[in-house]
Image (cartoon, rainbow, N blue to C red; front, side):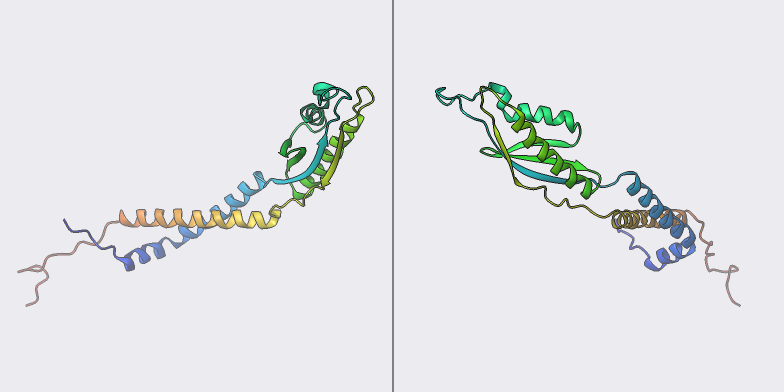
Amino acid sequence: MSEQVPDLPRSVQIIGRYKILVAFMAVLGFLGGIVFGALNPPVSGSKALVVFAAPACPGGGGAICGGPMFSPAYIQARLLKTFPSGVQVKPVTGNVLSVSVVAGTPAQAQATAEAAARTFVADAGSLSYLGEQPSAQIIQPATRATGTTTPKQLLGDGLLGAVLGLLIGIIAALAGGRTSIDPVALPRGRGVGATT
């Protein structure tokens, strides 16, 4: 069974015949990409590092004074009441904790991470048990959040949509062109197309 080699010039002719459809699909894809990008804005993240140390009870053999109240988990629960969404506190190494924030824009993410880290330090300093207090200190301020600027992101989404629309337009043009009826070629023979 032999495979037919595609006729490239015929394909190009079909696409040329349906160029308005192909262009329309590309424009429609571009607009669809922009709408999709506007409805799904990119998120940005930022984080600050905090060192947290709970005091040991005097004469307690290394036990932590205040029990769970002096644990990072307790302070994290208080922090999540102030910042209910997008804030996470995770241990990094030893007593170092990461306060991470996810927000819509880089500026929002960085500002919220800074505020959350300051709130964590303030909450830790407000706790007291038998005259002992945990200590918390910001060792790395909130990092500058990285994210794509909105116009650049929208243009990228629009171009991706245009490419997708262009491909769909070409496929539709080729499918429509293959279903058109080719002119009938009459066989040469006696009385039919023969010259005398």
